[in-house]
Image (tube, rainbow, N blue to C red; front, side):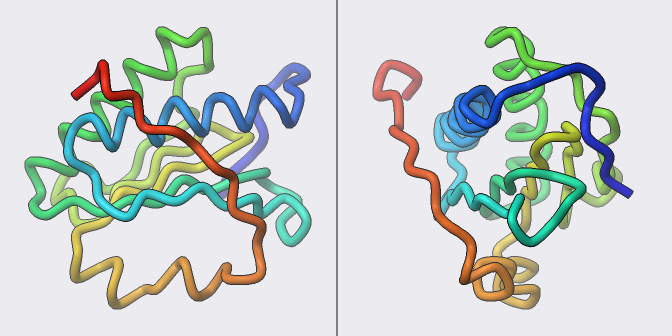
Length: 131
């Protein structure tokens, strides 16, 4: 179960860190990356970052990149990481936000975007310097 990280963190900081995670995914080849504000519907977290990887190796690479980028941005370490063994769906729980890294078939099957279609989308910008 996801729990918010200890200590105060503003929604603006959550938004910033979600952008960091989204850019990290993009930089390693993540596709269709979205950031959804789910805090109104869920009391356990404020946002989801959802992205697609074409193969398990890419999903693992994105997980490593997200962890490093969030750390370099002064963010917390993940409270837990699930799914790295087969890397079909890796869930990185940061408390205030959760990063979902899915293989294409998993993203198509679970349709998290559709499930949370009423959630606000937070814009983020790719960083061409990371490419």
